[in-house]
Image (cartoon, rainbow, N blue to C red):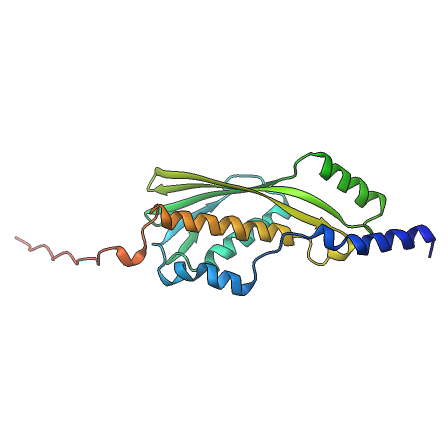
Length: 203
């Protein structure tokens, strides 16, 4: 093995800890986080995610993960995707951009120059934009933005989208918290029970 490759590999192992990726939430963390919502869920909602956008394949995985987390959170009595059925709707847009700063450029040079042996850290800005609608009326617009670290190396090829899932986990939690604290969507338990209408008497 060439000496240069040995040195690069040794540096890569040393830098692994310094290039930590933002981690997705664990199953236990999600259960604890979503418990207040699943025990007292919101009314059913229509959910639209990046509706009408042309979505690259890699980003489609993030949007599928977002939809799955909305379902598994059990924060709503029911979530219907891509259809209009209920009084309340969530129009979501989730986007990821990579700032073109010096740190990201240096990471790209380091990663490419070492052929992936030396891990590189990239910063990604995750943005979740939310429109809460009642019927066709926009009740509230919300936006959440956060910068997450993503490590790229040969050692991470088995799970290259870990940082993306971490972003979805954290921004989704912020959205659910605001929906509850701001009273933007009612809880199912506070709605009055439906009263059957009497049958009309025929003359």
